Structures are given as structure tokens and as C-alpha cells.
Length: 462
Image (tube, rainbow, N blue to C red; front, top):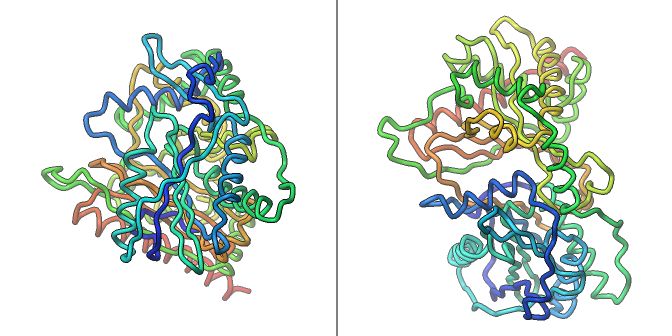
């Protein structure tokens, strides 16, 4: 499953239908008041949205094929059951004078209504129309802040689901392909779907907020954040080389995707990382640091590699398959000099990963509240191993993909590095400038070459 933008998704022409969740009973009383608070990430995201003059869309989508011909009855059943299964999809956060107020629908109280938009003969026009729908409707603080889309043809159906980030994380969207297909096939054949029970993100959010309120300014995580920001001049670390235009006239972002390793190369690289005392992710960070030393004067001068990194917070079994925003953000830094070898860098990266993972348990919104300073990401590295997600072996057959919305930011560089059964790739986003285009692609080529040389050297030694 590749993670890309809408331009990277090939959409065959067909009839476009939008499926929107609705409250089965339109009476306001069907929404019950819910005392469970928003998570810190949800609160920051939903309350900030109306304050931004030109907010970037913030949806994540998944796309995959359904067996043809499409059964609308089975699809409606599958989508209702999926919404019932995950309570966060039936909950609404409404801004008021005191912050956010939550209301929630009971299981079975949501329905799905389909509306045909039209038949499109051109794939580009169809993709643009779908993206317009997502940009307009998958937004906070609306309910629903997610929607479903089908593109039907005589021989196949392409299914899309787009959710605002306040509802989901990347893992949730990767998991959705498996769950919705299982529910659809069960409804199609009139059998009971075999899916494990899951916990509610609403319970997680309440637990997380309660724990975060116990964190004070002297907490180890807050102290580490303070030290990290002091070392980077009070702001978040930049990409290792310049990416902004001289006049900063282009705030929009450019997206791309490059494969780093095939499946056999990824397995060989993994083995090398473990012999060096680290994980695949630690070895990857070591290669990023090596490339940064080649590319960036700032990295060489500081003698370290620095970035922000997201980590999942699904720390209890009931959250593993639950739909929600289970992500924390943490700073990561380790010493990196030109003379350091891969094994030494991998070991340091592993220690930095372990420390950062602990720090990610404290919501970054709580950290900024205690620091009295915003955390504005400028260089972010994400790593996910998709191989263990249910259904991942079938993604290629399903033509599954994850899609992200476009972004407006003059400095941010974001690298999503994902490992699949086919290998490892980097999906990236950077400012749409000529300088960033050259710099980021050159940096990623250095990363790819470093990983390939390590694997090649290992094979030669064997």
C-alpha cells in the first residue's frame, strides 16, 4: 500500500456516488451528551481550524477495489456496521464557550445515504472531483467529518473513504481496507463477520487526558523538550539543507514517492540493523543522518541529527484495532559525525528512539501548554511497518492505497517511510520551490544509495 496524494492515484472512469453518514433519527435528542473529553490532539486540531485564514485540508483517505458488480445493499450494511464498531465515528465535538462539548450517537443510530454525482469519462476530472469533495466535507468540526465514495463500472468498483485527521491516524486508515472489505463480503453472503472486539477511542482520550493533567513543568518529558528546543534555537529543527525560496513566495507543498529497497533488500538491511544492535527504523535513521551530513552544513556543524517523529500510542490490546488518532509526537536527536560508522550510528539512533517513544506518551499539546511555546514542525520523519496490519498481504490484489490531502506550508518537509511486503519506500512532501525540489530529491537519493551500499557490502561479505 503506497501512501500518496490524489495525483498519485489512478482512478478509472465510472459513475461517482457519495455515501454520507447521517443520524437515522434526525431529532436532536438522538445525540446524547457525552462527558468524555476530546484528546489533546483533537482539541488542538478542532479549535484551531476556524482560527486559520487559509486552513490546509487535513483528511486522510484509503482507496481499494470491491468485487463487481457492486451490491448497494451490502455496502450500506457494511458501512453501518463499521460506524457502529468504532464509537469515535459516531461522536461529534462541538466548540462552545468552554472549549469542546462532545455528543455521541448510540450504536445503530447512524445510517448511510447514497447520492449519485454523475458519470465521468476522464480519470483526471474524476480524481479532481473526488478531491474537491474531500476538501469540502472531511473537515473539522463538522459531523460527519468523513465520507465514502464509490466509482462503479460494469467490471469493478473503486471505494474511497476520507476522514479528517481528528477521527483517525494512518494505521486506522490502513486497517479500514481490511475491515470494510470483510464487512462487505459478509453482508454479500449473508454471514456473520468475524472481527475481534475493539476498544473506544473516546475511552482512550479520557484516560490520556487524565494522565496528562498529572504532568507538570518538572516532568522528565517536558524537561527534555525544553532542552531540545534550546539546542535548536527555540524552534523545531529544519531539514538538513535549505528548502525555502528566497522570497518565501510559494507556501504550497509538492508531493512525491520513491522506493528505497525491494523485499529482499529490506530483509537484508533489517538483518544488518539487528546485528548492529538496532531495529530497521534505527538503521534507517542512521542512513538519514549519514545523508544529512553529506547534504547539510548545519548538520555537520552541530554534529547531530535532529527531527520530530510521530509514535503510535496504542499501548493496550483494546486499542490495537480501534479507529482513532492514537499518535504522539516527540523530538529525536543523536550524535552523528562524518567519521562515525553505521553500527555506531544505529546504536545511538536506537537509544534515541527508545527515549522519544517514552516522550510521545505525553501529548505535545500538553507540553506546549507547560512550555508556553508552540511546537511548529519543520522536519518530520515517520516510520511504519505495514506488514503486520490485517489484510496487508492482499493489498496489491485490492489495489489498495492511502491518500493524503494537499498542504500549505513554506518550510515543512515531511518524510513517511513505510515498510511493506514489497520492500520499503519514502513518501515525501516539501515546499514547492525549485531549491526544495533539488535538495530533497538529492537527499533521498543519498539515503537510498547509502542503504543499497550497506546491503551490497553485506552481500559481498557473505
